[in-house]
Image 1 (cartoon, rainbow, N blue to C red):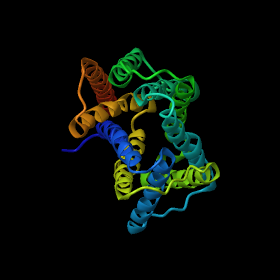
Image 2: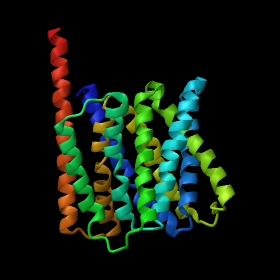
Image 3: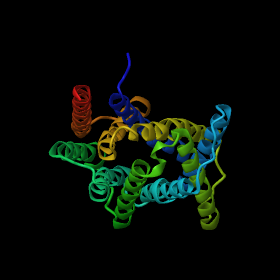
Length: 305
């Protein structure tokens, strides 16, 4: 069965969100076996850059890019993905990860707002409604009922992490790098992240090498799932799906984390988890069906013309 571009893009965005849902599991394993948050994201970036370099060389894909592309990639890497990871993971040191993650999910709102204000993207009540439903679902799923105290520092870091991620999504969606080979783009983002994080770890004394093989295995798992599958799928999806719709679909991520927690960590499900899961599924299906209707409408107009 041949999928049209819109359907393929929707599937890729959801696949990307599902892969990002593996991060909490792998992070818990890594931290329990010696890695710190800084070392975890550093080795994740190093492994991703190395694996993608080997893959691209094997496929004989050229890595040469123009200076303007290089500058844009560095901005997307440093001011987007790298700073997002640092601020989000550091926020976990100040408050419960569930609350921090809920605040981090300001990024769909920030992405939609940025797309409308700076890039002229059209929005409508359907998108706003789906976004609100997904945010309420995220609150029920990971934020509500958390016993840990609230921290202004942690909340600020988590909030800023969402803004950084919105910047990354908007940059790769509305700049000249959008049409780049997705594997090449993610290679350079991972490479710049690795260099930046290494320098930060050296100057702040955050580099920790006291870990075991299990920690490394968890990093390899997250590298394959997120940096290679998830980030590439996100970039491919953004070529045909607008960023505000993509970020609403990305709220599938915490639902994946919940399923993994129940299946592998024997975590229990409360009514809040059930309610949040249903709301997120409603928002994701709502947007997916809306995009497919739009796609069919455009195809009909093209055939008539």
